[in-house]
Length: 387
Image 1: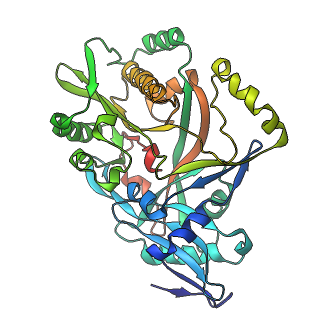
Image 2: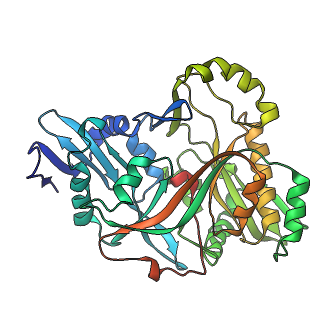
Image 3: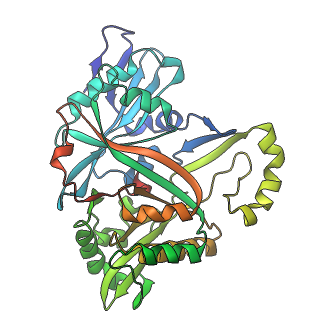
């Protein structure tokens, strides 16, 4: 489908991306951004389409092409994946990767993309979206109700914590003991590495967790065992399972996505460049994330399906402790996860050390507010590795 613009350059067309657009998409996504004196680039090497394998089961990647210059100047994605919504499996769209070439900003490209969204966003006719606080361009485009864009409906705040230290264990245990939540004990819980014999229990556990959390991707871990690209970079042995009397009560997977997605350091301010070696020496004391050399990528693991009963803070903390140790054994020692502010487990984040990214979780739609259709008793769940 192609939508021609009549009000601006007639050389611009909106169309679905093809594999031939892969390099151009990688370039659009990798536009540098500067934060706290560090210039970084979010990269999808070696292939944008391979990186998007983990986002969608049905892809929809869209570009605006300047046919005169034979250049892709804007893009967005709005595919879908099956998720547990209101305790039932249904397709859920996820909008991401909105980018506009800085030379073409202000030329109504966002309105053109919005028109494509309107024409193509059906079944379902709304889309899940996360906008992090430092993504000013996306906030300006989506949250200010720019002409032609779908309406944005805010669900609430989330935090992505890239954890570098677990904090004071004594204070954490004291806090857990005084929260008076049910199911906070880890007595009698044993853990093991996942194996083929656990696949049925893992699938059943995801369905069980959908009784507490909304929007969990509907996983079939048999696909993971078979090497399906939806689990690219993951193996069954990357998962740790927690059992209480033969009942699966918790799990997580340690996911190294470096083979498909990277956060590359492009430039340091002169002050940071000078002090970087000393800063890295002191990370043992400060518990901060080490800064790589210019041109290298940040190293961290993301936690896949970090799930347990939302009130079992003790088990959640134990799983984070185990994941952190496991990551350290693999030479990294940095783990990233995302929690809704509505998740009881989020209370523990105050004790942890790491890099925090606050964002807004919401929905976009041209067909009215989808939020009344969601069960408010369920806690929003965000899979950090698929954001």
